Image 1 (cartoon, rainbow, N blue to C red):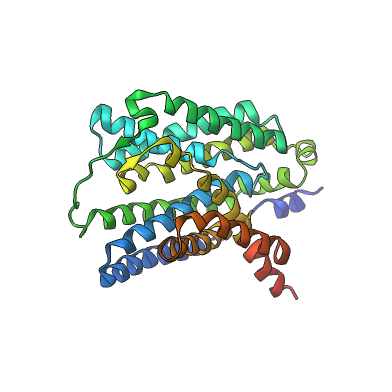
Image 2 (cartoon, helix red, strand yellow; image 1 turned 135 degrees about the vertical axis):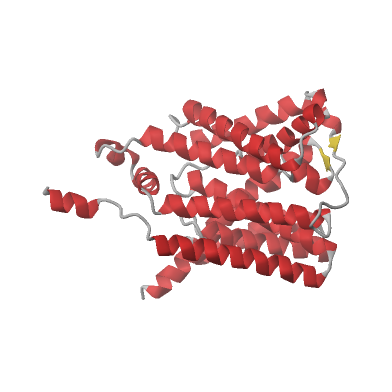
Length: 327
């Protein structure tokens, strides 16, 4: 292979114009959403928006490992709960506000992801999935027996009525989660076009072939588990402030793990935009069902939509659109 051919095969860095367009468009979208919700002047809109954005970040975080690398993580609820209880513990111990707690949750979630990857990434397929599910069960048991954060009784979080310049605390939480979701999607977008993303895609397609070609698969998987764990913990960090009360059943709820998997699959796993589409679609349907029918219908909606897309569009909405373009 000539030097010229090797250079041609190297991944080209993303154009600066593409980054500018993404972050500029994201900033304009954020401003438009905040302005539009202020015009609505409805407190519920802020909390519904927060709910959707939380799933955008959670689905994006899951997709870094499950979509790009092909390692299915059934323990998303465990990582999210780690972020939520990090906030509760730090607020009770040191009286920290939400933003420092989010930063701490990212560090703890990243370390947990790194440790999980180091122990479990030698397993493959269903064995890795079972290991991540076991991790969530272990974390749930620890929290239930940890009286400092409320144990099985749960813990209340007293939050202020508002934080200037925001009109309400609901708006503040919405803006915080909006910024976190944009950062998470930006990270996923950056990974997709990078050497890391190409390496993860190679090991997803054929890990043995990737290793034979010199791809440092274990190192890449550890980076993916660390980033995924950190972002999932960040998604859960404001949860106790959102609800005002947190208990293990809510923090480790089945809905988090199911939605974290279903949303990328429906939107298009392995792409940065797929989890965003899937999360907005499913979370919006669930919020509508909560208001009009019952929150108990949420998982049923996920199941029905997932079955429909598995039959009609197994590669998700993004795959369906791309397939249509290639015809």
